[in-house]
Length: 88
Image 1 (spheres, rainbow, N blue to C red):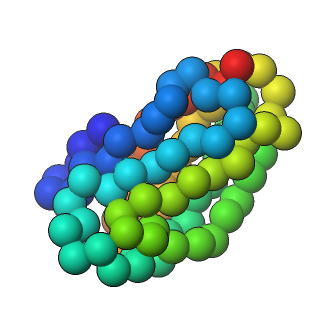
Image 2: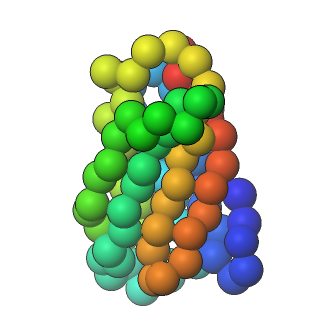
């Protein structure tokens, strides 16, 4: 998904265990702080993680989530990006 100049790829989707969030515009390979929140479809927060992109990538373990559709919200560099993913 894309917002402004920043693009992200989430895969695999649907996901069973580990959702990979890859920043598309990070050619430097440096780490970049981010926070990731996951919400169910009735807006209950299920996860809240503060971490960093390492080499433009972050792996989120979603294995404990129940099957279903979720919103994922990524906050980085003062910007917020939001999209859906499916947990198998």
